[in-house]
Length: 125
Image (cartoon, rainbow, N blue to C red):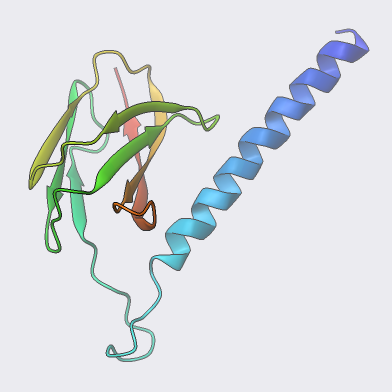
């Protein structure tokens, strides 16, 4: 490898690791307690997703707090948005036929763009 390729590889690696670190901190922040819950008790999740790992589709099922104005965004490992669902239903299914094998991150956002919940899932084909 010449020096330019090594630098480009290192930059991509740093970018990917930074994205994972930021997302993991975001997910951890979602596990904070609410003022009304006892200390140390995590907040209940809004959304359940299955199957994980997924092969042809993944279903996002609202357990509570459904709002039709939510947006579901899916990102690949390097951080590129690969899918967005703007018409959320209480049970939203995403077709994974155009997804490659790997790990993906999702973010559920409200109308104002605030993060409601985040998580990750695996596609195995």
